[in-house]
Image (cartoon, helix red, strand yellow):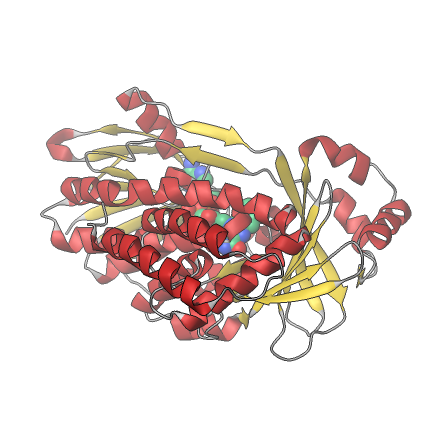
Length: 450
Ligand SMILES: Cc1cc2nc3c(=O)[nH]c(=O)nc-3n(C[C@H](O)[C@H](O)[C@H](O)COP(=O)(O)OP(=O)(O)OC[C@H]3O[C@@H](n4cnc5c(N)ncnc54)[C@H](O)[C@@H]3O)c2cc1C
């Protein structure tokens, strides 16, 4: 029986453990943190507590038979609710067809869902508090792995590094192959915050955004109507100016900047002491070396501004399993996966960082509302021809690299069709421009994925 070591019992690591065990592979899953640290409250403390789970992630969970359960724990988000500084409130639907699903889920609940599935697999051994220290190539194409708190290395047929943005699997790969990944520690940092807002009318709830000059506050629908799981994004340099305030002054700052929300009792005080989360991106490659492969954030961490890091990590797992099913061994499957996925990861990285500008700056302008209207009009008027890039990312599994190229074509089309009033363009002009766009779009879709 083949034996695989997975470093990191995050979402990708747990997913792969379940899927490999179901293929008759013995999996040893090593997690640096103790099991107690991964409980609901501790995990929530470490990271943003709510995540947007969309089509790619749901599809991957579906392959494990977990989609229905994930849907039960999630709350559907139908669009963006933008709270302007003027007090004006605007709702913009995510998917003009109303079909696409994007769910707000608690990270810890999703974690529990996958951890529970892993515990049920007899071929999965979970080792908490035993992180990967480093690894080396062994004999006969195997890999030797050393762990914290264990004197002896262990030998496996393959090693999957699902150990997140600070991956030690990646650090060893960099040393072994003499390559360097680029890590960018982003200027924006974040804190999770619990919020209350007036409940939204039916069919008009979703991701709340308060774009302001230096900061951006977002909130995903919580368990009760009017409750939001929020994240405050702010420059790292502004930490002292915000959280050096006492609780009353911090509460007052929220009331001034975001007058249409409330902080629950005690939240301002709790917020001061919560750790400031870092945002780092990872780019580079190769992600594999013989029987060793990086997946998820370990290979390609992106900024959270498109809500795709986890969705992409779960899609990675699904694609990797396809490669394993088709290839003759771990090393060729890992190589095939890297070749297929690297451009997609780069494209997602670019689009995610670019979306910060859209969320913080563009959502504040009338031009943004006009552009969204025009996109919705085109999607309804030319179904199957015009798919807004956000829909292609969130409600479809189009490879991210193709989405990026489609987005460039669409930006040119939108610029040609934009009218000053925001009214739809004349039908004849729209037909002509869309026909030209369709020709370019069709040849893009006909190209092989990589
Ligand atoms: C503020 C914020 C908001 C986000 N919102 C969204 C969203 O809405 N939608 C979305 O799709 N994505 C979102 N993301 C991104 C998402 O959180 C990540 O992309 C996702 O968690 C990646 O999963 P992973 O399994 O690859 O890595 P991780 O979730 O980071 O898991 C890695 C695991 O490895 C463990 N580990 C680390 N080092 C070692 C070691 N040496 N040995 C063993 N174990 C180790 C860690 O303890 C951890 O358990 C967000 C990220 C942030 C920061």
